[in-house]
Length: 225
Length: 185
Image (tube, rainbow over all chains, first blue to last red; front, side, top):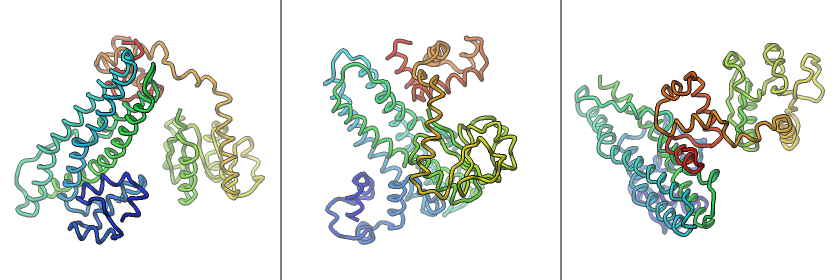
């Protein structure tokens, strides 16, 4: 396992989400998973989809249990809230304050980031309060007593174009294409780097969300009827 | 500007290989693959900048591809295609080494810049696009924008599409930031 992580340090937050911490030694993926009571197959699938944009085994992912998928998505959400958002914010704040004070475009970028942060925070909140509990209760009902309970329709869940992704894309694009005036290069790069890594992570999250969880829920709703 | 490329090849390996080369070496490109001409939306006129096809597809749909001959690339096995019909069409010799193929593709795409210098000033928005942008950021709907400017809804949508591709910004909040930064709003 350490070999993979050495090659792709961007996996570190991903394995952390599974409770795997560094100090991996020479243990194999299987051994590490056994130690943490994890489903090796699930961990490997997530790692592979994360590393390879082309690889996305929809059928295979859909065979995992709803709770596994939700658990993973919840952990990615927590990671965004607790680490990535504050991280970007920290870089962004010093970027804005260390650059020339009268560059008003930077303040605008800061404001734009706040819009994005609000959107993402609101989605995460709705996930935890409404969407994920609903998915879980559906899967529990199906195992206990099929055909009961009211239905929740989250039309917005079928979004083709994800607003969160679009906002992040724009944030990066505005900085890369339309930045003007004096600014601190080094801090600017730090901000863009942090945004990019969040962007990559959210893309993976959304793939699982829209292409795995949403169809799974739709199938369960159908089954219940 | 992104090149929009259609690959219409029945050979899965050829299709995948070409897709790979184009996406890796000629970024950015929007590549769509079709296993047969029948599955290709031919009536959807000119949504593509380039078509990669076999000589069979060319022969069966000469009308379609002859009128787009400068955008069409026919994949052929060997040098000197025997078929005189396809004169004036670009050929790609698929048995050549990868390097040669990449060079051929590069030449093909290089030709496009030479005769479309008009695309160069595309960074700036046209006066009309600026009008549309100014209205977008007020938060009104496309329909309302159309009414205010006395243009059709479709025209508004086209302007929006062009604004987004010129600026690389999709969301209303992003466009607002751009507009304020550039004193449009």
